[in-house]
Length: 489
Image (cartoon, rainbow, N blue to C red; front, side):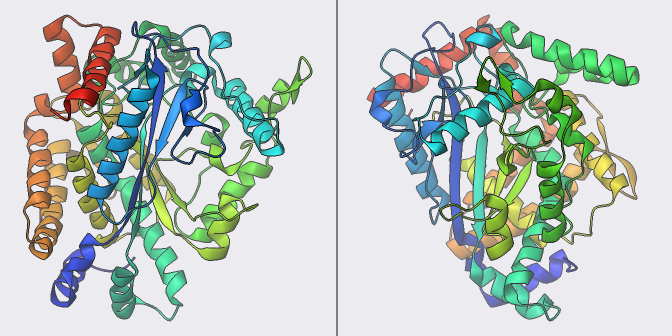
């Protein structure tokens, strides 16, 4: 949107800054069930959690062994955190002889063919879900699908949009204006997401059973662009988040398309194009194997949920409706941030303080001026994403600002934190607290002291205790399970 950050804050301050505290938030947390030896559990989805298609709070993701914990949308992040803690306690209790894996990168994995895809009832919906997962396994490999993360869902309050609409509408109706504002926010999120990867990245290491995925990716890099091999090898020394790097989730054939966030119509058009475009690679795989259907289609995307991005703009779907149709009919209802790693130091996988920071950060993305993204800038944004994911610890790491050339991570970070602190102060003044400014300050310190980064902390703790990736994960999983009986430490 074509507004100025300072002007937006000034108007909100004079009107009602308490609207910054309002909205809806929710969390989806993925996590594998593992044995006490750190192996992927090959048991069925626990009966205690009921039917996967009917339980909206504890279900499965890609694998039968991969749980998904889902909170409803709630009116404060404190409520969300308590709800997620409650779900985590319940799951830990019901797992009995198994553990909830506390890291984004997978536990000790068996061979590809043994990793179980989630099983569903023999109904049209259940069959479609299974075939879709077979397609994911065939296209990307099961091991890659075993990576887990945190999805942070949020929506801004209508009262905030009322104020913005009053001062910045250009004659469009309010719902069109809201769509434009969400897409404006999403463009800025893509510009500044590197900061979240730096601050919250918590997947600097992985088990040896995942090495085949990394080696396959290195092989691809050497073949297509050998000049990138040296920087890419930095993952062994400087990685913050293997999960969101090219060694983690792969976008496969999607990488040949550019999904535009410049408008809702362009966003819908490009995703639909991928759903209708036949892929030569996936066509060669075929639709059936050994009498079983293994993909929903041979197109670039089997369905819209296969679209991989750091942020997705969504609308609550009604029965029989696709996500894209819902978005087109009723506009953006909420946004889903998908680049948050599971925090192994938190039983719930994310801390309340992280949620406070995300509140501030997403408001910054909304309030900052947001021009349309051109191809050159998109390439630089993606480059920054990958640099931080693979080389985030490096001293004097330079990033790329569109039209301004290279800039040190610390210098750009300080510029952003200056604006974050202004938003945090308004929020604290409205809520008569200091929690937002405190969380912003705590994150700012990580720009100066990299040892405080969760990615760095994990590696240092492993070295200090002589842990492997697996023994570190088991230790944290046991610690979280034992808290069920002792309360939060």
